[in-house]
Image 1: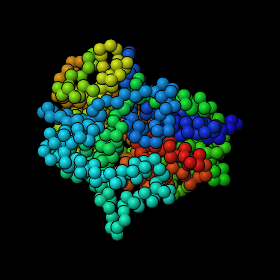
Image 2: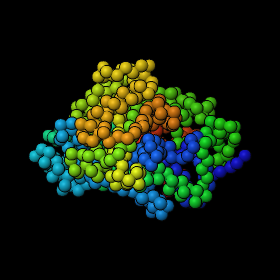
Image 3: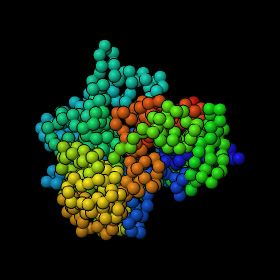
Image 4: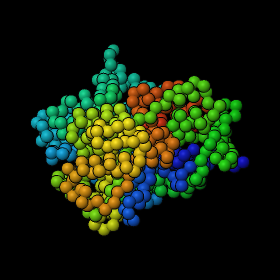
Length: 523
């Protein structure tokens, strides 16, 4: 039986980050991946026409650039061919009636933008950022720490209790909604631009606990921008893979792990689909969600309490991504959008909240809020000369539709059939055309990623959730992945869990990979 110090189940970017740290430290690492190449939801392909390189799933990496992984590994990844472009401005918003706004990375410029939208909103924005400043160090530090460890508990205590007898203002922010957080602004355009971003963190505008994520997103975008790799998101995977293998790590694809072996309470190896056994002398790292780990991979070796909790692990909303091959770049009426990162197209924050409610009720939203991005504005290598790509990302979608809020589309049995998908695409393209006048005329071809595609491709998406499980308060922070496992160390010795189903959750940050690697290396 082949033997390695560490065996990693799955090769999402968090798994690759953990493996990179271990391999750089001279440790022996094997990564096993069920798909044809590593990377998980970080993948780039010619989905529409030859020469058009689309990010199939995730695309931008601000969380990575704002955290410790890029500080530690950025130089080495750059030396292996990874380079980024950073759009300016990073994001914005467009309304169908022509109103727009952009988020500036400069505080002075952002205050001026807010004041132009509504006098007084600039001062409100500056005051909001200033009020968060005393907490910023601890909050951003927690994104790369095990929340159950003593140092993290001390930071949480400072954030919530401060030096007084009562609770801090941050404690209110932690439980507030995104809609309440942005109610300090008079401009509906500014409110929509900021609060809609919680959709990209698996949360909703009127959900308790979503408010703090508006603040975190705004701070992150102003600090790090909205960087994406030249050549496509998968360029990050290519560089991480090279870093791992150059330091002696091994990555095996088309190999699915069916069982994690446990002997006398310790993880000792894995069994693959073809029955091959491999031994792990130090630890097994499972880049899986709690339901996959405790209900499938561990079998009867899983503790009964955690099996019961894993059976109640919940998935959130679905995602639909429409990938457009364009004959020419999008012609935005607002010239600032020519090089923008990822703006929202919306009718307003209230309409966004309504669309979310419709999606959560199983209905196709009548008026969805969504983002678009055009990487070719800064990276023309991803399309033929003079052409462009555009990605439309809808995050209020039901995983299995049971109706249409507009009463127009027949959803059939709820599966994402070609007919259902195409009719939704028609609705969305019509909406995009209200913001970008040369859409749909510039479209040469399109492809779609549906919740069914996500479910088929990656078990961690469950029935079609791109964020690896619901991120509401009952399944976040110390309750993620499970109440009985408030961290990445499982109760089974030598078994660690990482990925979007663990803290700090979804997004290309490398956070859980960083946390687990530090634990294993004793840092």
